[in-house]
Image (tube, rainbow, N blue to C red; front, side):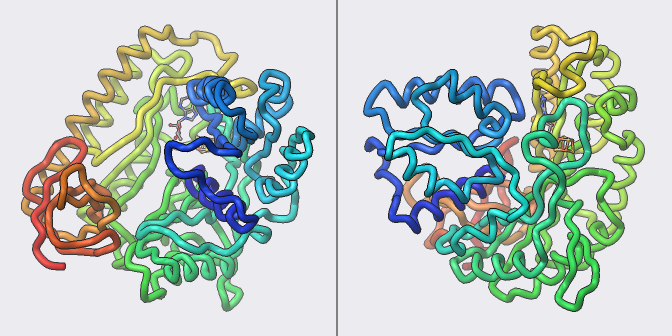
Length: 421
Ligand code: 5AD
Ligand code: SF4
């Protein structure tokens, strides 16, 4: 979502004649688009501000969720910063820049009723794979998480706006669109005929755009995986066989303390239903180790879940106490060295899982959407339908959707052989 926001800020500034500084050259303005989800990300911002103001002292804007959560504190702690703008207010950046040029500092962390999306210029140039924010905010209030506080309540963007933006994205070169939202599968809207639809209805209609070849969505909550959305995986060819469904822990007691409102069993049922309609679906998730009170045995339950599911790829994190969240003041905070050890063990198990998934793909023929050049001359990188990174050689270009045979697997990527362009 921050990548999407970053692109939209860059487009907004470009419309004002503010263009990216050539790589390696000093910029006159630096926008730090920040994440508040873990403490490490927050710490980095202050060191970035220090580093930036050592040299040419550009104008510095802090945007994103740290801006939202710590607006006034950033102003106090970092006098070098002249603008602080929250994720719902960044359409106001041009006016804030004018103020900054005139020597005045400003903070805007409003969550205005008017939507920023209506105030942003239309999408112009994008790569073959683009993001599209369909929903923002979260009403789930997991006890460890700042998102409901920084991004606010769940808001779905209107159906017609999304169809129009998707059309613009494909006109601008996108072949794949990933629908994004903190709780993307909670999206609801009214379609062109005034019928109330969920994310599956939106995906169905987006799939009618001829130039759009692939659709993905992230991030989902297990409780919002409706029958319709699961069924869509078996019916819509353009919907890629990939499901990122965070579980966080393999222990029901920990899930309850996290206020996740699903159990291991109900989560596994969703995965089973998804596999029933789309047997090759690649599964992904997020995990947190060291949630307050997590015992050794409860952590082992997470390892058992990983072994049982067979994930294609996952993200895993050490629990990070966030100010203002209920978990931050819970008893039994876990010692850092225990968290380190658990994370290492979990990541080793996830590597085994990813490698097994990739090895099972060897011999498959599939389409790869090329999105980057590889490390060597003539080498290309792209994504398989299962979101695997595939590298191969051939006379192709970025944006080509080509037929490739997967020939060799590692835990993080596969080597492919180009079959047809
Ligand atoms: N500490 C560690 N990880 C967190 N996440 C969210 N909040 C925290 C936290 N306080 C993780 C969850 C979520 C992902 C986006 O970030 O796994 O799914
Ligand atoms: Fe945070 Fe996701 Fe829970 Fe919402 S559902 S509170 S975004 S972890």
